[in-house]
Amino acid sequence: MVSKINDKQSVVDSRMATSAEGTKIAVGKSPSGVCDGRQHSLQAQMKHINLSFAACGFLGIYHLGAAAAFHRHGKKLLKDVKAFAGASAGSLAAAVLLAVPENIEKCKHFAYGFAQEVRRLNFGAVTPGYDFMKTLREGIESILPSDVHEIAENRLYVSVTNSKSGENHLVSNFASREDLIKVLLASSFIPVYAGIKPVEFKGQKWVDGGLTNGLPILPVGRTVTISPFSGRLDICPQDKGRVDLYVKLAKQDMMLSLANLVRLNQALFPPDQEKMELLYQNGFDDAVRFLLKENWFE
Image (cartoon, rainbow, N blue to C red; front, side, top):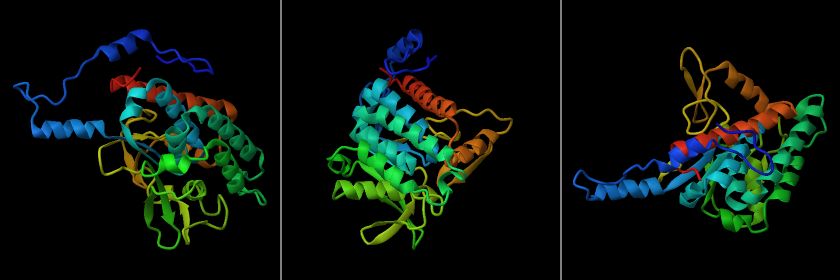
């Protein structure tokens, strides 16, 4: 249904798009045709949309594909989005889509280059002498605008884990661009893998939010969930197995499948360039299918 995307355009089956656009669903009407209080509340709830991007390491390239689909074909949806949330790589994708969607392409190429750099190392990111966080910081600083903290204030929710207590926190207040960058770095800091010293923020030390809450669900409104792992999610790969078995990892319901086990490995040890490009395309395609299904595609 969706062709391979390139820098210029993506082609979606016009019959399917027309069908989705033409489908009208009556919402908020009682049998008599009059809206009651509960239905008004339901309408308000449906209008309050959040987007949450799961923790996933180098599979965050899938998120960028989904973000590109939202930016290109989901403007109706984005108008209703009140908050963006994420953990680890998901928080980076959320920040880019919220604050500077025109830089999704730039972010994609950074991700490709970052993955290539790690692949070339003898022991990947844990190769002695390699500074994973330095490379990540340089990428973040090159992509996010100077006023990103103002745009993100009370709209971006970043999952982080307190290294001392092990408790999860969702950070949504950012006094400066540097504060926001520190929180994003903390959310991606996997102990030992990314370094030895946790990220310091407001006098405390923080590590990967994906360890305690890999898929933040916000309390108000509907949270649309996006993940490169197959599971009970709005946007994700659809693995086919003989038996649907699920496991909850850091608050994310993931299907027990061989494909997901492969993905878990790829999250830390990035696959080759061709596979990275396919993951980006898959994220784009899965997001388009969701937009068509929900009548948000345009």
